[in-house]
Length: 220
Image (tube, rainbow, N blue to C red; front, side, top):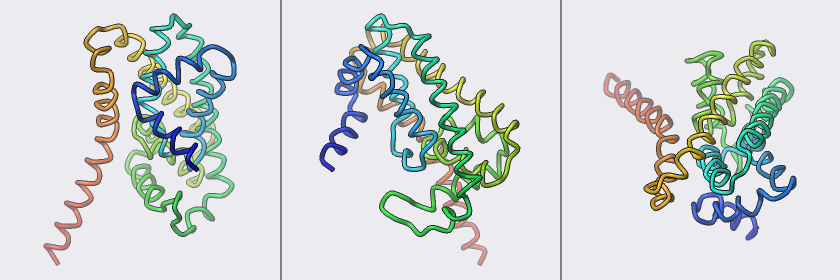
């Protein structure tokens, strides 16, 4: 358990994450691990705690600093994201109703699913694209699409578009800005800013829901 906690601390610590990724980008096992992180966040319901946006940004920074082939890395991570989303969709088709009825546990919260379902009801198929940029929603959106029996060909189109926009934007941003002196000197603050920006939609949604409840209670 301690090893898992240490790993999570590494993912959320900018300096340790840079060192960690630098050591990974030396062989195929390292690249496989990076793909596993992206796949887990998009394809496995327990991957919602992974820092996708800041992770991809840092991958871009390390790739630029180390002279690695960013196009090769983007291609690998893009495949991982597309396959992960497709896996989440298939899980939803096969096991959706049973999982929706599961009680809360330490690692599973029905609230995450219900929040994603509300997001899906509001935005429809475009949720798959929007969700790529929203933590937690990103993990559960493909699953909810599967539960809703969205036609797979339609889901696949949204899946590819969303994955391309997410992977390319985050890694290219890191690859480009990583060489800027101001960003290098304040890298940890930049990563924290990215995390805050990615969490903003969730905060806004929460405040809206809370305001709506207050309004209904006031009318009552």
